[in-house]
Length: 111
Length: 113
Image (cartoon, chains in turn blue, green):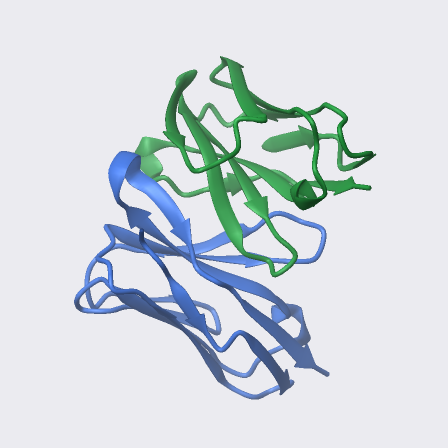
């Protein structure tokens, strides 16, 4: 069974602070996806990283895929209240290209 | 335009009842999924269909039966509902040529009393 552990589980920070969310596994994935979910809605894809060591930037968000393709991180610079939500990493791999979701990180950015 | 839609949004029912949730996608994707998100927000895959064929069937009680009449629709029927079935159920779709990136519906919050 492939497991993706995210840390921290909860994060409450002030507007303007920086933060990093980690997504770790003992399994190798073909690619790693990051989603954000807001209350009452389904998760929305932010980015997909495919190559070991790959770094992708989406405005103030920086995503990195580990060299061994077992882990990933999401760094947010100068967090805004609009960044508040549940962040989920998801690894693609295993039979039938199954997507396995991480345990989630709930972020609250206080104005 | 709605990409992935599911109905109903909310479903409150009593133990022992049978209920269905419907899902439709207009993205032209060939793969559709059902996920269950529990109270701790853990999102777990239940089923996956590719072009109407079941390809992923996780350890789910056989009270849950998915049906895909065509590749744009995936329904979930639940028999003999139990308290532990209370959760938010998400439908999603994806395409092979986009790396199986998941497009989610708005979710159905099921409450069993």
